[in-house]
Image (cartoon, rainbow, N blue to C red; front, side):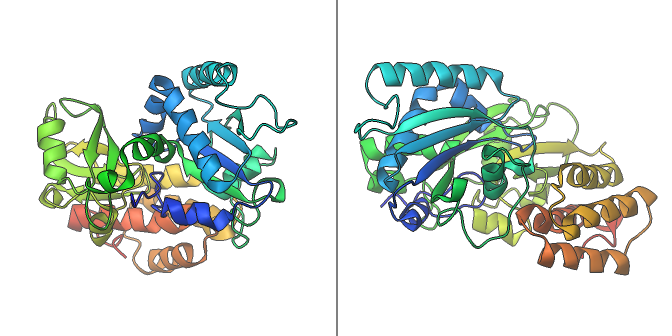
Length: 358
């Protein structure tokens, strides 16, 4: 057993998700390449540099789920990835690895390439499905879960591009060998994207459980200039860590204990010249702009949070109520995660953002 978990943020066990579809007729498998985290470009690199591997992983997942149809959804801002995938798909069909149409008895899956709409929340799987159906990319209530009723009412499995790109290696080398990487709880490797403030920015593949200090100091080479104030990890709604947190391992469990999240594992560095109040406003601005508006706790809550952050006053009790409402009543993880991200930033900066750590 490889123990592979989703690499798109939720970390759900891949085998369990595939089994939930139950190999029922009409099952569809979607490769989610609508990568929306600022600071993360792992999926983009995979689709641009190794599209054959992405398609192979998708095809193998189709066989595992009993799906005859696969879709790769690519972020609209990735035109080169779209072109490379179309080219790779044409070659795969010509070489007989994928079917050209599902109108024949050919057991091989049919794959199509679709373009996303450029919305952050459209990467959430129910919003992604709505987008593929031609509707607005808004989150939908669950249940029913996509594995029961997804695209056009059919069982639908959504896997992140990086997740599917791991499958060919596992098939070739075996699940047991893959599980030797990482930890006993979280196996395998993860692509970590480092921001431009590091000496060596770029994407690095590391085993899960690698100490953050090794990633930041050895692989990234530290900051180009200035002193580290905080690290943002897991995207804009992931979480913030200080220089004192660098000895923790890169795992979902360890990061969650510090109020952060692994997410896509993009790491963005901020030096001591960064104004924490400006960074706080940026989080709320991003949340307010990217909320799909499907539920009022998120739609209204992000605007109220931005208003509080813009006034520059200590929010205290009004924000505590707002944070609790968003965390407990938002429709999807986007709205639920905003207060956690704000809380982790406040804890990282301490008294400079007092009142926001609720």
